[in-house]
Image (tube, rainbow, N blue to C red):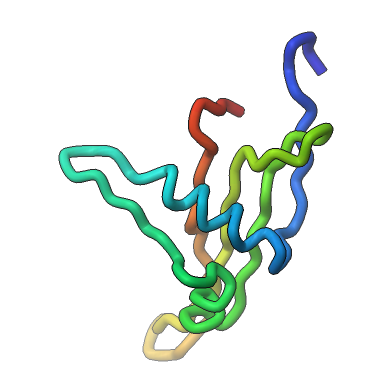
Amino acid sequence: MRPGKTALRVRPARPDDDAAIRRLLRERALDGAIRLSLTREPSFFASLDRESLRHDTLLVEEADTGALVGMGTRQVQPARLEGAEVPLGYLSQVRLAPRRRL
């Protein structure tokens, strides 16, 4: 690791991370001509349970403090391919905390 760089760790999100995840989603609105904030209230995990067949969320944290640096979610939903229903995975909820760079 280079001097001045904080060590990071990646881990699966847990239900007790819900409030921190929802805060990051509120803080990191999508900028542009229209500022758009995609939140998951009142429960991040419950909202994914309702809309996905499966989902996995990974968090990036500072190794020494546990401060949330970023996140991303893989969701699986049904899709149609050549007339057949197939599971389709995609990335969503990709966010980086304010004033952070990887």
